[in-house]
Image 1 (cartoon, rainbow, N blue to C red):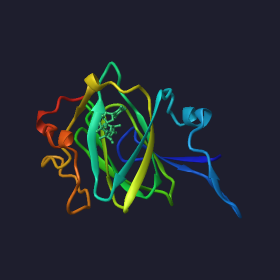
Image 2 (cartoon, rainbow, N blue to C red; image 1 turned 90 degrees about the vertical axis):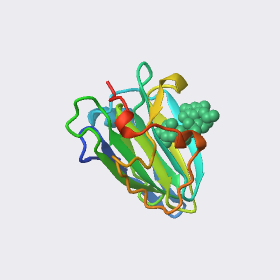
Image 3 (cartoon, rainbow, N blue to C red; image 1 turned 45 degrees about the horizontal axis):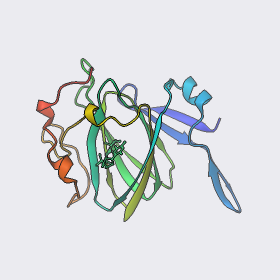
Image 4 (cartoon, helix red, strand yellow; image 1 turned 45 degrees about the vertical axis):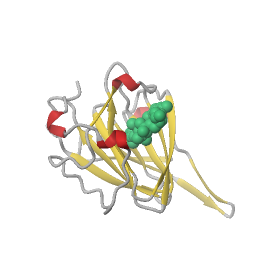
Length: 182
Ligand SMILES: Cc1cn([C@H]2C[C@H](O)[C@@H](COP(=O)(O)OP(=O)(O)O[C@H]3O[C@H](C)C(=O)[C@H](O)[C@H]3O)O2)c(=O)[nH]c1=O
C-alpha cells in the first residue's frame, strides 16, 4: 500500500507517509489516491490546490475558513523544511485550544491532513520552502478567520528567532477573542 496513515494526538489529524520508490534515475511517489484516502476516512473532495514559496523564518498563519466554505487541507513541503502547526478550534472539542506541530520536509515527504475546524500555519526552517496543499473548498476571503501566530494563550513554539510575518497576519485577533468553529 503506497500510504501509511498515522493518527496524531488530536482526533482527526493524520500524518500521511507515502511510499517513495527510488531508482537510479531518482524517486517517484504518489501524493494522493482517492481510494486509499477514503479508506483512511478522508472522504471529502478537494477543489483547490495551493502553492507557496517562503523564505527562511517566514510564518504564514494561523488561518482557517469558516462555513459555507470550510477547508480541510492536505499539506506537503515539496522543497525545504517547515514546522507545520494545527490548532483545534472545534466547538465542544475536548482538545479545544490544543496545538500540534509537525516537521514536513523534502526528505520525509510526509503529508499532513488538517481537518475542518483547525487553525493552520507554518514556519520555514530551511533557507526557503515550497509548500503545496490541497483544499476541500475554494478560496473564500469572506469566510477567512484567524489568530495571531504568537498568541500568548496558545504559546506556540515556532522555533525561529525573528519570524517574518505579513502585515495582515500581524493584525489577526488573539485566541481568547476567537469564536469556536461550528
Ligand atoms: C489563501 C489564498 C490567497 N489568495 C491570494 C490573496 C492574497 O492576495 C495572496 C496571499 O494570500 P495570503 O496572505 O492569505 O496567503 P497565506 O498567508 O499563505 O495564506 C494561507 O496561509 C495558511 C498557511 C493557510 O493554511 C491558508 O491556506 C492560507 O490562509 O493570495 C488566493 O488568491 N487564494 C487563496 O486560496
